[in-house]
Image (cartoon, rainbow, N blue to C red; front, side, top):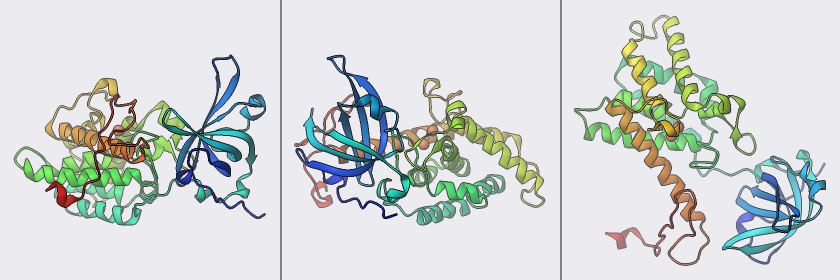
Length: 336
Ligand SMILES: [Fe+2]
Ligand SMILES: [Fe+2]
């Protein structure tokens, strides 16, 4: 079976382009227009990006087949709608998986997972507390399944670092900042505990999300969530370490165990954001703020990068309810 080679990619599409190309369906729903007629609302993707699409005819026939994770051959035309490009589909046909080269449809990561993982292990190596260090090693170095998943997982479905290896990028970025803050506030912060907060706060996203195709929540992710799953992991790993002679200097101290769990549980900062407890020690407070900062830097940065609005201002960002200023392109020397 000869697979279909993709020649048109989302990134190169322009207003009024005629399209005949396969895509992966990221989102698919049937909606009702103002005239009462049903239409399909889709988001199509490939390795270069994603585009909204509409299908106005034969909706009933397509609705059951053109679902999320399906590959489809699309004929249509690009049009600009409220400042955004949209693909109006005239013909759509579902493809079998052996007709496509899957990697042409999944977002590529510009990141090198092995390099990031080595960098992370460097921070683990620099830890002093034998209990905290053994716990970090057991999870990030010795658990082959976790390491393999961490080298692929995104950090979120849509919000931030939502691409392969995004979780590892997020964790390494946070750890660098935490390392700086640990020396800046040397007398008030425990560097090793801080690191565990950075390493583990989102680690259960490797099981909360599925990322073989379009990123989505798993059953366990929906019903339990990464905060509680992270605490379960810490419990399990400490029990394993305690059962392996020579891995720890003694039983894992109860207070240390509770503090690690607290950093995971409190990292969303507020109960309405999913944390069952508020940050109640300085390390928990710092991990929460730096996690929030790092995710926003990525989310807003990517939004500004992808924005198509001409001029210095972006289109409205609905999530943050504001326009962002892109400014004129500046080189580093001009800003000095
Ligand atoms: Fe989180
Ligand atoms: Fe995070």
